[in-house]
Amino acid sequence: MFKELNRIVEVDEKRAKIARAPGRANIIGEHTDYNEGYVLPCTVDRDIVIVAQPCNYEVILHSINLNTTIKFPLRNIRFDPQDRWGTYPKGVAHYLLQAGYEIDGLIGVIHGTIPARAGLGSSAALEIATALIFQLLYDIEISPVEMALLCFKAENEFGGVSCGIMDQFASALGRRDSLLFLDCRTLSHEAVEIPSSKLRVVLLNTMVERSAEAVLNKRKLECQKAVQIIKKFRPETKSLRDLSTDDFEQLKNKLPATLGKRCQHVVYENERVIEMVKALKRDRFDTIGELMHTSHASCRDLYEVSCRELDTMVEIAETIDGVVGCRMTGAGLGGCAVCLVWDRAVEELAKRVSESYKEKTGINPEIYVSKIPPGAGEFVDWNENSGEIF
Ligand code: GLA
Image 1 (cartoon, rainbow, N blue to C red):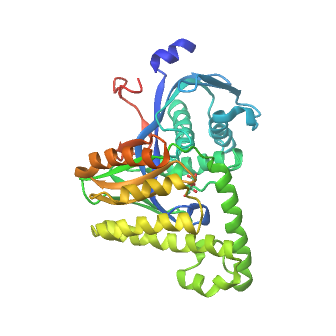
Image 2: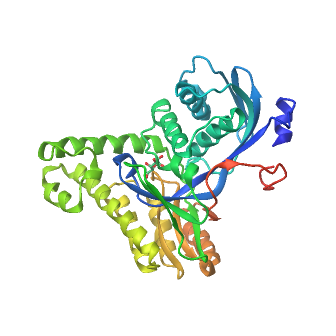
Image 3: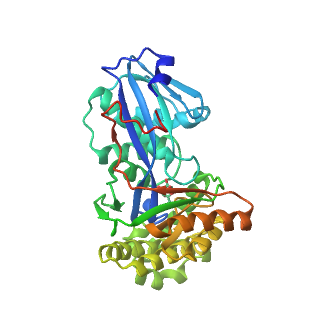
């Protein structure tokens, strides 16, 4: 990457920094974050890396993957749909300045290994990597929680995507070998260790690209409508998070059918996250599998964010001995399924998925066996090459 940076500017080794932010897979708690509920994601070992050095007044970032460059002055930052991926760094710079952080410009290159539009949080990773590179270059004091919230604003308010806070939190606060149990209302969070060193996270990419934006914006509106109706009967309700499963059962007849289904998913999914944390802590692998299975069915039938390819992927994976659980992950309608798999079954899973998925859908899937790395951080060792990136 330094070679690439050298092409656009003379590298100043003393002042250049490297920021790295990982993507994420959500193990359970889908579409609950923007309803102020619970989520349980983990980082994946695919990331966005930015190498940059300070410059005056403007931001110049070159994407090695896309071979395009964005350039904008720090004064008067405005949203422009033409910016595409550049919207995210722009939004981050905008909110850093708005929050009063003393930053100046930067010039750098970006490289990513997170497949785009695969539901693995690539936009959040880009935002976090951007915030982090500013932090490193200008020595600003910003906690990982503040950073995640600011990056969330960059995507939500600046970019106009009705996402929740999960992806940014996972990328910024993830811990090695742990899942991040996050309460999206109070922001309290806990690292829940993966119960066995022999359990792997495997991502099965359907290779069906999807626009998270459309799904999220539509579903968020539906959830808000449901809350408005529920408020008539329970004025204290602020979001779907406020409903227990008993509340839902009592109120469900008041809701139109579609909103009732959306609501049912969110209320029971929140409960499943809490059950999952207990099951992980007690090594209840059957329960872990059942919860992932039910969560997928709920995303498919009630929240209606799965698709034929995701369902096929999950069905294939679930027949394999050694797969603890499998479900769609992220916004849905394509992208990846996530599996928790015993080490010994990873090869068989990869083989069977490659064959059967191709046979059933005509599409060649991609399979990533992932470690759970730490959340975003600086690359301190300039020679810490990950081959693929440098
Ligand atoms: C996307 C959003 C997240 C979350 C998931 C669905 O990844 O960015 O905030 O809403 O969809 O769980």
